[in-house]
Image (cartoon, rainbow, N blue to C red; front, top):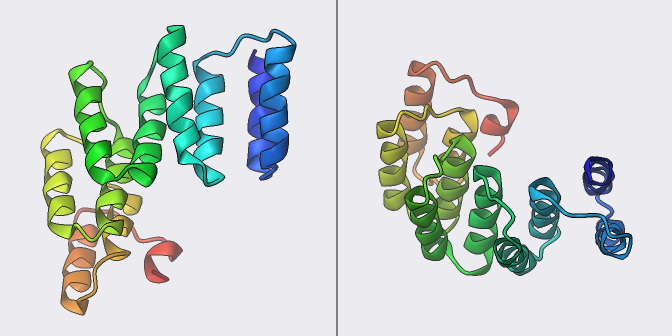
Length: 178
């Protein structure tokens, strides 16, 4: 299974979506068991190839087959659901994830912050950012970049940029070209 996962990820890295699908189906034909990593890779492929609803379907299949889940699988699903069904459904899944005992990581927070900002919900994003801080998760440059992408007032951008620098987070090229 590990070698198949590596090959599947390789097709994914070079953007060969059709090859990914064919290889996924070939795994079934050859009787190769799919594990958590197989599903996580393929769910990510579905999201990034513009088919987030397929990632949701895969997640349901994982649960049905009894595949043990982890925070990475949940992060992928949060993004998929946020894209296909909306940020409120993604937030519901985030809460479910916590209730099941999974601890959100920086990717979880960035995913939800990005969804909130992309949907113009800056105040909700700010509250969520504070929740992240209260739970002991330190922001990184990608966290701040979520906000820079949606802020429109120069004063807000400068205030946030100063806060980012004060906390020791260094901007990247992406920060400057947003």
